[in-house]
Amino acid sequence: MTRIYDAKQFNTVYSELICRGSFQESPEYYQLYRSRYETLVKQYCDLAPPTPLKVLDVGGGQLGLLCNKLWDDDAYVADIGGIHLEYLQHQGLKVVNWNLCLEEQPFKAEFDFIFFSEVIEHLPLPVHIVLERLRIALKPGGTIICSTPNLYRLRNVVYMALGKQIYDYFRVPENQGLGHVIEYSIDHLRWQFEKAGFENCNIEYCQMHHSPNDLVFRVMYWIGSPLFLIPRFRDNLVAIAQAPSN
Image 1: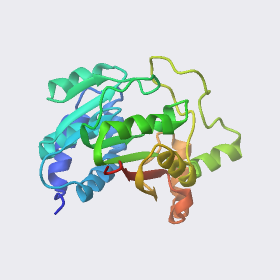
Image 2 (image 1 turned 180 degrees about the vertical axis):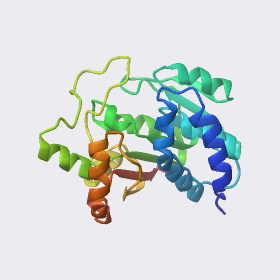
Image 3 (image 1 turned 180 degrees about the horizontal axis):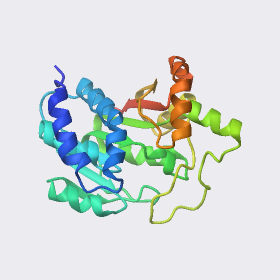
């Protein structure tokens, strides 16, 4: 038996604690990208049992906060710092500073589930190194759900055709966040998960609909939206994988 997704309850908690919360992005950002969080929470519901789990959200902490308030999960958030960590701690989450680009392993076999959403595209190192650290943090048989932009998304095709810069400069990581320095195809991302020792890796193209901020690209988005029927052009990849049971 899996969890029940209650859309009304999700919308209430999302509006009160995410859109009106103290995070690094503006409230408008969370209104714009609501579909991403809703999609991942629904995926989680399909995977998680009804009883509370020990959950780690690597990144902004919004998904961990939602799980804590919707289902009373024991939620942790790991990030390199920021005002949002104080806010999340005030909301009852456990907070740890964890720079994924450094050789450190604060957790071992502790979590039932890990969210790793929109992070790997910011990491200027082979991501299988980071994924292995997260695998070690999972209990045997634990699950990770990872979302990241699709290398072949329509936006990148348009940017390349127009000669626009797609990624930020690839550089040695510092103790601060980076922009997008790499994006992955399904085959490349699956290889990274398998190299990190994960099992039962399933990766799908996913279109989490939202309107771009820039008016020109918003018009182009809606004109080109029929192309999203072709999976290869969709904006995101969603990967679900398990740590080995033994």
